[in-house]
Length: 277
Image (tube, rainbow, N blue to C red):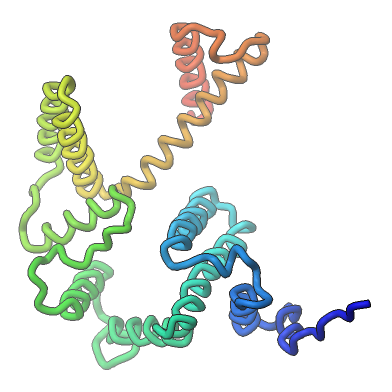
């Protein structure tokens, strides 16, 4: 009869609800242990985990947008676990450890806030602080070939577009008024219409239109990702209302005509606006 293996000494920490950060780091280490860890966790690498990291960041943003404060600790924990995961893999490969991650961000925050942690005056507006922050970041980037260097390629495309445009605007490459951006939106929409029969041109013109719309969002002080998320949520609500009405009639959407669904959509739209006052 086989005897159970002795439990590792770290079991006490793993099961200690007050173990804090040390507990989480030990859990991650144990999950990646090549002999006793989880097969799925052992197989992962930076590239396979990166999509989960992005997904968890979006789930944090979603909880905040919905005001779901009871869910936020769990979502933030999921995001923190992603940082721990990458740090564990890096330590295994000899690149760096979690302590290096903590040290790097702490040093960066101290350096970028001389008005809090240094001798610089705090007598500035929020706009002054943003300008100074960008100046510090520019010095950190050093003498790069372009002011656009360093904008992460892995960002959502709309967010990256806004960041690229902000960089260009800081050196004067920008429309002075939102009205001019609206004119450019109309111009790009017309070019897309003209290119509709040419897939390659339509692809390019559609990208140009999205890029200009991101610029318009920047001029209107709108987060385009947040605006699109809100539009997605609105579409889900209204289409759900269409489905609900059809369900009450004993029908499915595929059994209704487009005209019928359009009418139900308009009804849902009117009802929603009436509730909003």
